[in-house]
Image (cartoon, rainbow, N blue to C red):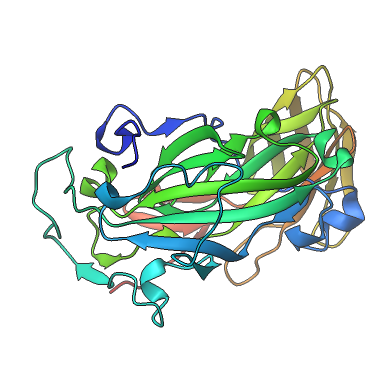
Length: 331
């Protein structure tokens, strides 16, 4: 029987070993690479989707200990499963069944506890790293796992996470080595968070979004950013402010390019901040979704931020976009 802390029934524990949340972005080698719009084209991105070894249990009570060991021998009780995919959708194997509810709980209501007969799945995948990879900081990302999961790498416990529809990111530097490495995960169908994720929806489980490693510079990198724009003088002037959280003693070089490819401004942050003023901004709307490119460059990484400049206000119960009245059609 598996002996693990019951984080899945502890409302005070959402994450163990996870990085702090931040804006979504992918680092690239240069501006040209960033403009490909495909994150798989980045040399700093390693996708781990594909076929994983998988074993399904009807109850966590039945899970055998030791599956997370680096030398664990995968036996005939395991099958291949595609990642990303909910395990209920592997119809040939018949793991569990999809469940639709709108307001009722599909299990006895006793928060924060969930039934002992809590279906779960073990996921195992091997991946390779070389010496160049190990010269960088490595972050393992799970973009969506329902409902919660425990994570081991090479037999060592890395962490735990829940909140199904958000990214969980782990720094895995101390757990990996050159050559073959192994990820092992225990994913549970229900956790205390399932009481809050009581939506009008299909309830399905497993790794349902992408899994990947980001390889980040140790000499200096962007950890997070927050960018705002403000329009003045009847939308003829724009003020852009950016606050960038930088790891390492570095500033960030930036370049702002218009939707037509014209350079608007360039320079370097001061204490991680950018403040720009420029005239006659090209505005974003749903009919004309024009986007500026803001390139952020530090060490050997370039981050591309797509910016839509717009003004959205409500006046006397009327919604205005860039000074024009708009109506929303709903159902």
